[in-house]
Length: 227
Image (cartoon, rainbow, N blue to C red; front, side, top):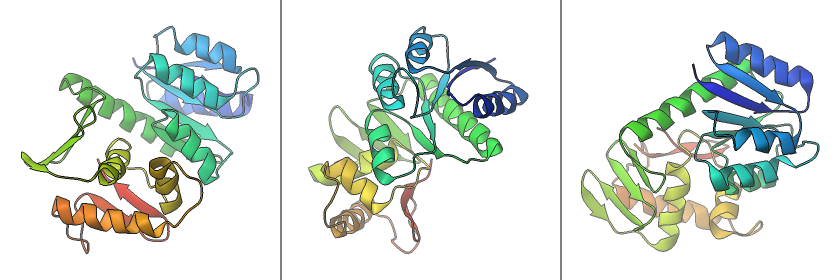
């Protein structure tokens, strides 16, 4: 039985998450304080962690930072905060996904299952957090090299960073503003450069922009790379 830690100070929401996850076959532990949440997380007993951002004692962002420094387990933020800045900060500190309240408990459960399944696949295949593979596309963080179907593809440093953001968060939609903030490390600027870099990436990956295999456009929202 997979063990999930829920760090959430709203008892009603925490119990809702627990009920749905337990119905799906998970063992769930609840913590309502940031300090106690980190202490529980660092015990190493949990396969996945859900964390709110607005916590007493220690902020959810600090929880993310401390957990990610020590552990590689999937980490999902569930928060009423929904600005691009909140998402950028959480993802930048190591969160694997960001779910905005109010949320569908069934969708949250499905995301938990998907992240656990993906983590298990990577673990079984011996793929480390420095190496990622999606349908013939491979990326290695340490060497900063990319291959498609065994053929190496030369990318500029910024193109590599954009691809790394997408491939390490498969299935997640990033707005142009989020991509700009996470890759260029600036909160404000001309997001046209994101469009240009995505176009160049598609060309180098051999992706048809009208029907891309890898980096898909989600109209009105941004870009997504499917697992």
